[in-house]
Image (cartoon, rainbow, N blue to C red; front, side, top):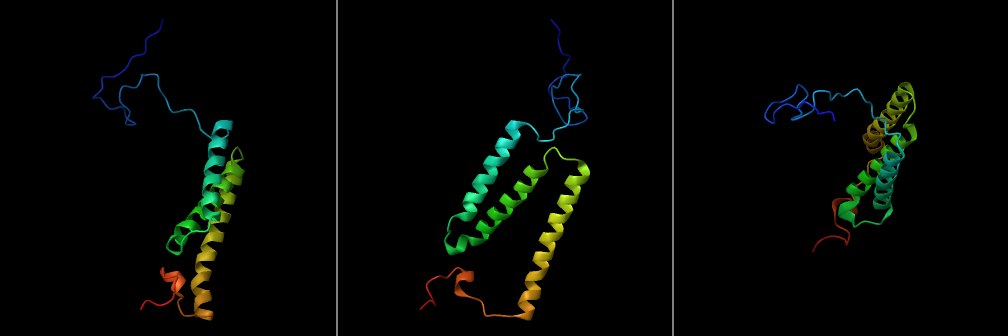
Length: 130
């Protein structure tokens, strides 16, 4: 029977762990390619997409768009699991550039075609308050 040497509880190892066997290392790499990881990510995507697709009350629409963005981002992550580092980096760069152009386009659109704010966008869905 082998015994593992451990350090006493208060002593911190260089990477912050306590009571870690001396032969513990961080050489393993997690790439998310295990079936369990893919199932968990798929479940998160499904929950986010479901929250995005339901019809929320007006004040919650920003959170709904956040769920949609999360579902899209995690779908991209699922698509590149197990691919090369350069492929993952290219897709990440492309997705960030697309998001940046979309965010940059919103004020440009508003400058070209301004419109008055709508009550729905300010949390009021039943006309003016009296």
